[in-house]
Length: 327
Image (cartoon, rainbow, N blue to C red; front, side, top):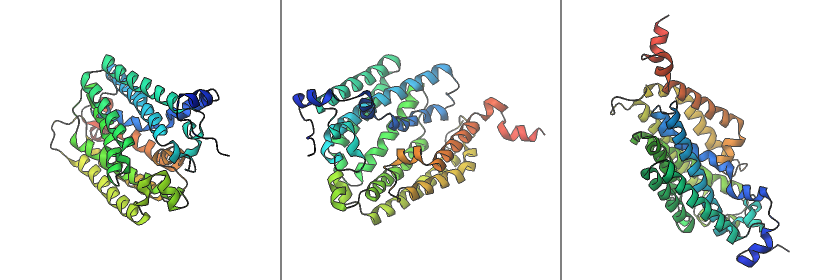
C-alpha cells in the first residue's frame, strides 16, 4: 500500500524524522542552480567580471537567486506533491515520497526566501532586491495558477530568466542591453517548449501526462514541434541581431566578433531540440548536465565569448585584429 502524503503538522512530525540530509538537499535541488548563471550575463557583457568588487556583487546576486529559487522549489513540491507522485522521476522527490512533510518544506521555503531578500538588500542595492522579489512573485504566481495556462506557462518561465539577467546587471551597475534581454528571453522560450517536449516523451500515456501537468493535455507533440522550430529560429536570429547591432555606442567590447561563434550556437540549439524528443531527459538542466556534447558546446561557447569580450584588456585596444596584424 502506498504511504499517504504528509499534509499537516502531525504527519510532518511523523515523516520528518525519517528524512536524511540528502532528502533536504534534494528538496533544495542544487542541480537547478545552474540556471542562475544567467545572473553573470550582464556583468560579463559589461566587462565587470575582472573587477574584484563587481565579481563579488555578481556572486552575491547568484547566491541570493539560488536561495530564492530553492524556496520556490520547496513551495512548488508541496503544491504538486500528488501530481509528482505519478511522474516517472519526480515521484522520488522527498515531499512526493512523504519523507519531508508539507509544513517542514514550507518553513524551509519561508526561511530561504526571507534570507535571500535580506542578503540582496543588505549587501547589494534596493533595485536588485526589488527584481529578486519580483522574480519570487512571478514564480509564485506560476506555481499557483499560471502553470495551468498553455503557452503562457513557458513565457512566464522565460521571463524568470530575464529577471535573473536584469538583476545581475543591476547588482554591478551596468546598463541592461535590450538585445541581451531579447536573447535570454527567446533562448529560454525555446528551452521551455523543449522541456514540455521532454515531459511528453518521458510519460507513457496522455492520462498520466495530464495528471502530472494539466497543460500537457493541450500540448500535443505536433504543436510542440512547431513551437520549438519557431522559437529556435527566433532565438538564433535574435542572437545574430545582438552581435550586429551598433545602435549603442560606445560598446563595452567588440561584440560583433560573437558572430563567429554562430556555428556553436546553431549546433547547441539543434542538438537540444533533438535530445528533447528522445524521452531520456527530464528537461533542459538534465540535458545540459548529462549530455557530454551539449556540455562541451556550452563550455566552448562560453570560453570563446569571454575571450572575445576581454580581448582588449588582454591584447590591447585593437584586440585580436591588431595582434594578428602585428605579425
